[in-house]
Amino acid sequence: MNISGSPKAVDASADTVRTAALAAGLGDAEMAQVEAMRAAAEHIRLAEETVARSEQVLEGDLDADARSTNLAEIFDARLGDAIKKMPEKTDRLADGRDYLALRIAEPCADGLSRWQTLTSPPRLQQSWQALRGN
Image 1 (cartoon, rainbow, N blue to C red):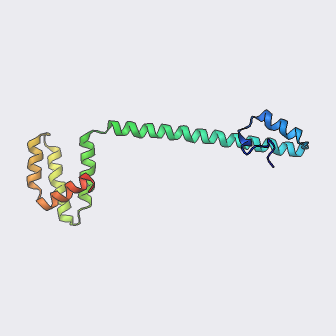
Image 2: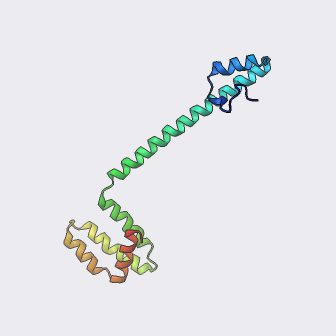
Image 3: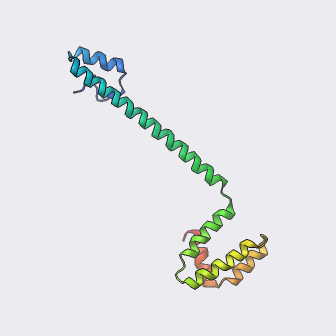
């Protein structure tokens, strides 16, 4: 039964709903049901607002995390994923060992070049493809 006569009775104010219910000639028991439904609708509205606010906060936190991630962290994460995907355990261990040695050393372009040279071309190619998301 739509007391307010519109398909969006949930959006009506509490006073409007009560007035429409009284005008329809509802008894005390029916009025109690109307109040219970109105209260439930209000709880649903509050829950939806809470979920929307929580979603906004979470998205803001994720954006903040993404903004605070530096290029080296992104590189490490993607290269680590690429190494894990390599089919041969010996290749994974070798590339992981070589990259760990690079990470421990003082950061420099020469170190990265040496690491690329030490890593065999097919394995390096697979790693770089995975790193780029190919």
